Image 1 (tube, helix red, strand yellow):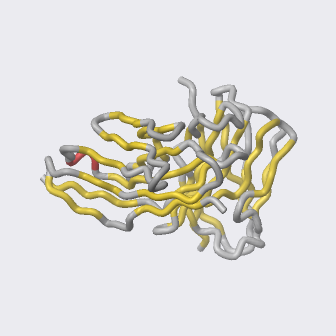
Image 2 (spheres, rainbow over the protein chains, first blue to last red):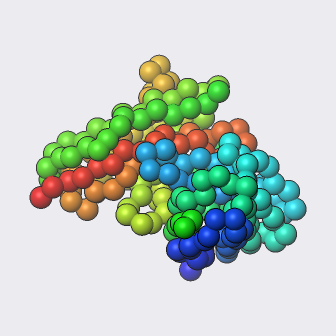
Length: 114
Length: 111
């Protein structure tokens, strides 16, 4: 089945450690996105990529990094510079930049910093 | 800039009650509008969308109409079920292609 796979589903990290969240899609979508969800805050955009080897900062990019070496993959690294990394992270994709198309979401990864 | 405001929850209803979740937006032009639903511990699923003014999106008994006069996209359902218990997000699409979300409204339906 086509879809978006995020892993791991749950992750625990000690303070000061970097951690990488995986996002893979087999929908042949050009665009991919990372959002962060906190209770009562909705979803906020971290980074997005509209094409391979290119990506842009979203609204809350500080303390995060991404790469887009393959169309199918858009991993997110939460660095030690991120002051409050405990959150639910959602990856999404869409066919392109068109004004009407929806985003398709993965199941999410919950990161807890101990 | 672009923004989405939706009514704060939680909203608690009895089964078969009428549901309205208010959503208003601020945007340049006429962006596409969306309602997503999130069940506990899961990602977001598209519930419905509208791409131009006066469009009505509908799915699974839910409806929302794109009202440019009031810059609103309120979600309605005539008779809710326990299985509708979830968090609902209103969103608009930016010109860059990504979505801006409201803060979400948690709905609990009691039998």
